Image (cartoon, rainbow, N blue to C red; front, top):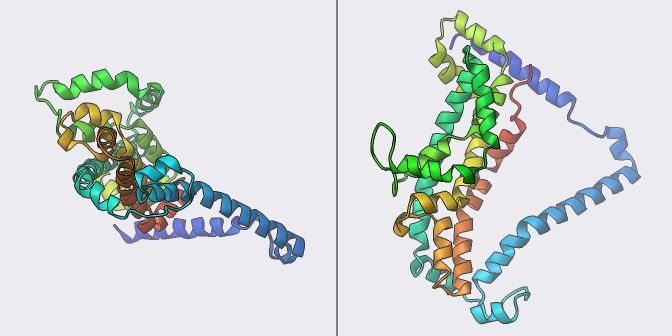
Length: 312
């Protein structure tokens, strides 16, 4: 990347930060010094915080409480706030007897492949439609948008027949991770949000790169991708959430019960497991994505703030 291109990127970033700093405050310093405003603002903030904690942490706490409660107590006193005799062994029973660790491993494999497939298709598709803009870009945009109005359940049969016998290749992807990865990659929603993000990147950067002799691949790899970290974080989070909880398609595409993810395995395990042990298995299934959010929450928040791209 030449010096002129780097200077253009820095100038646009500084201008963007100045614009954000100028419009960030809702209340002036004088308003905040007024007692009535401080009391009103603190009350609103406190009520909002307590409401969010109740709705956010309430289900997590209730799952944890059910995971360490005896089954009979869950049936007799379901609204008790804490079990009289916590059964911490339910977690180990769920891990060993129900093979939760094995199904979580399957889930991690499927989720990781889905994230990679989403990123490859969404970034390259958005780059072609937003930055390169060939002659057929406009009709392709409308066709991609039109697929959002097709319910997923309608295409299940056609999608299964496709992975059962890949056209021209004559191979079957059933009972393989590819049967989940490839359909997940064809997400019109992800392509459209990436395209919208790329539309917000000033065209001057691409023109400066072309003047420096950069080709389409160089512009994509050296300029567009480094500036797309916020949208990459958004895509990653959305893909992990959708792929982790996906139940119907993995159940159809992977009929081998030993290779299914945790979301498809839990309903089957419910037929032979005690209620408390089953809830413990659910708790173990919740922990990985929860930890992922806690570890990368700063990147996720930055991704949400930078969703609209750079302001020109």
